[in-house]
Amino acid sequence: MSDNTPTAADKARFHNLEQSKLQSNAQIRMAEALEALAGKSTGTYDNLILALIDGTAAGFNRALKTYLAVNGITRDSDAASITKQVTAFYNLLQDNCEWDGTTTFNDPDVASMSTGTRGGDNAGMVCTPSTVTTAGRDDFAGLPLFACVDCNWTIDATSLTPQITAIDGVCGKFVRDDPTKFVGVLQMTGYHYYTNPGEASNKTYLEGYRIGPDASHPNCAPMPEAVNPDGSVRPWMIHGKYAAGLKDGKFTCCSGIAEEGQLSHNSCHTYASAVGTGYSSMCACDLGFLQLMTRIKYAALTLEDSMVFATFYWSRDVATVAESGVKRIIIAASSKNNYVVGSQIIVGTAAGNDVQDAAMYSVSGQNGWTITDITDVTINGTAYAAIYVDAPSTFDTGAGNSDASKNTAIHTVRWKTGSTDDVKGNDGAIDLKSGKYPIKLQGIEFGLGAYEIVGDTILKLYQDTADTTKYWYEPYTVKKVANQSTGLTANYIASGAKFDQSIGEGYIKALKWGKDGVLFPYATGGSSSTYTRDYFWHNSKTVDTREWLALGDLDHGAGAGLSFLYGDGWLGGTWWHNAGRLSPNGNRG
Image (cartoon, rainbow, N blue to C red; front, side, top):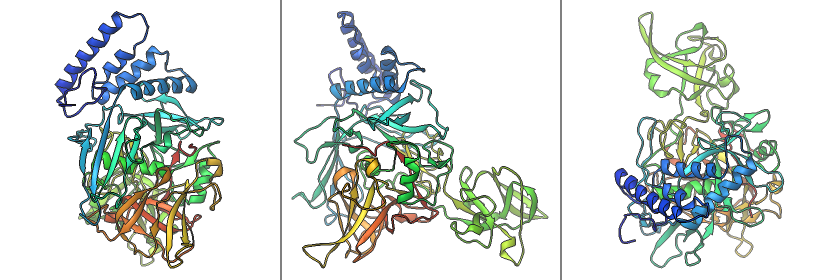
């Protein structure tokens, strides 16, 4: 294109236009489409549907809703019918829309900056996250390749593919907060292409994302989560929107439930498979998608300049005033700002110092209670802070005793899901930079204060057969839920992205893409302000297997992030900060 003005032939490419120009141009395109329809008797509304896409999120949703409506989809339609027509809608977009954008980064031995240079259709794009009060500017939100909507989904036990049962505000009976219903983020399938650090002679590496295949682009392939078990490619994909809670021994994917801790790679399999045939815990491609969206939408290796999730929220306080029959804990006034309304705390005795200690959650239980209010109070002339919680019944608090087990204590713990539900855009948080809140990216909420376990992947630690002085970390993935195991089997495939164990633990300088959506550390030696800004903990000279613990917990601070990896836990290892996610993407071709 010679400029940024979209026309009817621009295939839904929209750039940085004022809202009025978008609306005006959309009206022209709709008029052209209606004129074309008036002279034909084909009965198709495809041109009109495409004309409704005006570069805004509202326009995209209007197009989706209209398409489904004219094709007979209603509130009472079944999953098979909805899925069929959603597939037809996204096929229409795949055939008629274009977008091909890149971000180019410097090789780590050239520059330490965390940002890259936008290119192609990504040039000039702007993305700023939103809060509950302010909508940030997201130039991607209305583009067909990036527009996303929340849906309910299931897995078909025969085809092992995701089925759509409802779409929020569009069709079916969408439910967000029912533990027996699963919420996902639906969007168009993109094709990812890339080069890895150190591969190009110009000392740069490339991230690209586009509509449709193009063999001229390096490593160009559909997102792994869009490839059906039979090898066909769906024109759409779904990612689990929320971290997993636990209800009746089964993983959830809904709003308003406590993120479950004390999980492991192995128990994630148990709780996901308990849901039914074909259900998985989080896959490497689910994590890889978030990392790719960061690199394309924010042209950066990290989100930390834009938003920080709950990794600076590690607080413990002991009650300063004893009370009976209350739903609050009185703490020092100076500690008031250590806590935020809406988050979770555990309540127990001061004999416990860590979230893992049973004494620390002896009153509330491991998942804690939600803070409903934080107020200043004055008792006997002394100023304090009162932390109110949603306990199901009143309780007594202790204070001032020489025996710590008789004093009440509180500690921050993992958030409940759904804190980002009222955030105005696809990306954002209640507070973007405090490090106390979960965030969302492309509608997917994460960073609730715990690791998320990559359930379809086992980290293999092994000695090089050719050079026995070398030891490697390498992720192995499995493409069918039924073959997920508590140890490596022949069904697991080497990703090809590996890390030399002789390189020290530290902040990650560079990562490399491997097979099946894996993005894995390649070099450390960075810092909290350079390169990815995320930390990699690992073993050295070890032959074994490990679970992949991603993101970071409430206390990981600057070292946490989308590239963070704790690689020192055995496959059955559990702790309070080990959490998971239900995924529709465990069966891939």
